[in-house]
Image 1 (tube, rainbow, N blue to C red):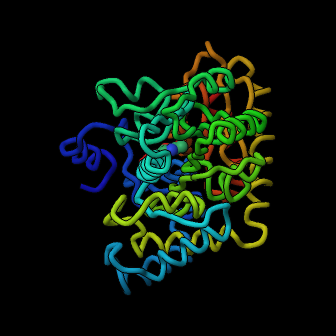
Image 2 (image 1 turned 90 degrees about the vertical axis):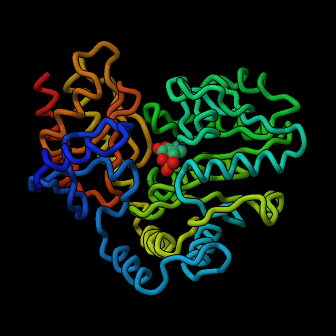
Length: 398
Ligand code: PLP
């Protein structure tokens, strides 16, 4: 019982089938490389869906995890712990926020944000406006906030108090604001629905609407946060500061954690007993996050993300120019990039990604007409060249 086929068979016998998995069992990772149970090597431009931003098994993060695991693994939030406190200090020192609530995932961080917006809004102000095409998680409230019907189907009735404005349409957004509105929730760049950045001007108008009507602006930076777009947080590039921000994924380089950040005067609305999480801010995950953040804050790290992002954009633009019947262009920021496929091209995102996996290259697709590239932020020119070369081989095969 050692190879991919055997692990697939064993897994298929026991898992609830919520995932469409490749017939591959990953056993080892190092930097931008992964190896499966058959010993095949892959280059990883997926990073566990924008999580392992320092590359797999980064020695400094691994050391921090091992040390913390050998020292103290869990005590609950009835006590302070050193890594959790250090992490909260790092997050607040490097963002607009003064206070942090620690969760275990992006969806949980968004749940905390929604609860905070409601309790801060007070009686009768419970409605959250999000955008069509958005993705905010898979818990019931975050599914309701997600502006894509396919995630709602079968789970109705969904929690009340969530409405969706048309992406990019300011009038539709303003028309939805009423006496019940407590917040506007959006991703500065929609990752899951096809790597769609929100224009700077659009974000600025959203901020103005929030100020005009006295409602909170929540940025879901679960995918865009922690260096992915070339600054520590994507909001820094828009000139717009949110009232609440959620992060997860890349903060911990592989361990599960999320966080909700806000300013002092808003944080005061969540008093003792209003929200909690047994594992939130777990010392081992927090130690991984502290190590990850410290590395990201080192001189040149973010500049290098921007540089490698520009290089990957150039390479993908060359691909789009070489295959005009398959691809139309490139969009995204930093190292969160999408190659947009033609509407009626011969190959869907799913087809291309499956053939790339056979070639030992991992990417994924978003919205099925966009190939999404989210490599470790440490990716080199040579690794980009290698991936682009394989992409060409696959596109030639259609
Ligand atoms: N928000 C955004 C923008 C995401 O991209 C995701 C996951 O892809 C989530 C929330 C949910 O995060 P998690 O899967 O950690 O619950």
